[in-house]
Image 1 (tube, one colour):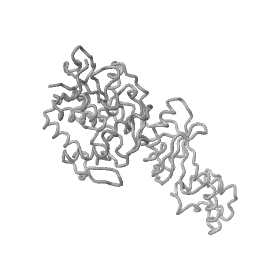
Image 2: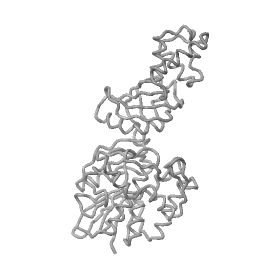
Image 3: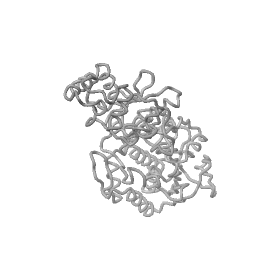
Length: 410
């Protein structure tokens, strides 16, 4: 019987273990936490949005943009749903976002644990792997609890995101020792910090809008949704979606700014015309109350102040220049991005093992026959909405299947 060692017991590692064991391999799962699957418990706000029915190449990012889609195509959302149904997880669909019917992330972890027990997978927790060495027949893995021998190794040790769940980036060092290039690892799906001091005045405000990330005069990314304003900057799903681009630009020492559009359904001209008409409808209304009913009071107060308009001035007396300035504030509110929040706040990372060095069908290393890589360790990050877990399941499944079935090349 072939022995497959899986380093890392997160989403991709558990999937790889179960898949390999289901295909006849003896699996040894090595996890440095005191339990497997810890990070899964916090996904989807504790409900585990484990895949999404909307699957397109644009939902995944990598320096090798074709790679993620090749992996996901071979184990798509329907495959994921079917897999979990076999494990007892009946799913519910919320506008394409797929959750366990129980709305409990714990259910996903428990289902994996039952399958791991059923398949007699050998699980070792509290084990730190320090070296993976190819030998004449297979591999020798050095750990702080001794050595482990295996015919094949699946490296699925996660990223640096959310280190409180055990993601410490140790897998990058192991991959690097084995000859792989590591693309700089940066926080993604994370809040952005901004320079302006006025954020303390608008903290707590939530508003629908569009966030775009810019450097110089070039728009790099754009997303629409609920923007959350914090005492240090911007947050919310659309900010998370564009944060990877801001992280990369900041790493490259480029100036980064964001434009916030709080009325994305209006053009600039339409916004100005709307404000002009609004001022004429109630000309006696004071400027300090002019935007009430349109936007949160904190935003209204800020824009009036930044526009240099006295709050006691009557709406009917607002000049074209003042209305155009207000329109610009609403449509193109510019803030300077100084940093992404650290790994502790990030849901995932961008960067990782260069996917040009990995086979997208088998997840096997181009440099080390018999070594497979899966999950967040790779230079792949997805959008919010179950995409990162989808890639974890797909890459783990591919690695587990190939490691259990392919002829040993070592």
